[in-house]
Length: 77
Image (tube, rainbow, N blue to C red):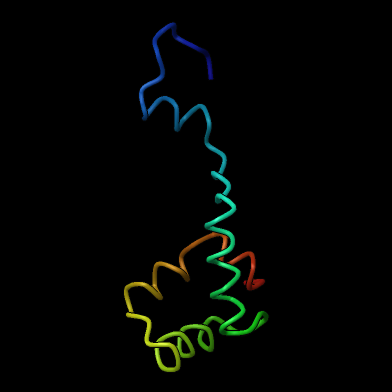
């Protein structure tokens, strides 16, 4: 991408820096705690069922976690 001389607005910044933003250390701690609750290496269906049934997570929250690239990488999906 060629710089056009303007301060990068959010849209232009996102296009210029299209890589995934790395989670902060506190976010990683949260992801790691959730993965530890379920157990690493579980299938997506097992992960979803365990969080919803055994730990009382709401379906929307489970969907958001399963869509997260960080969780997908940690779980090996």
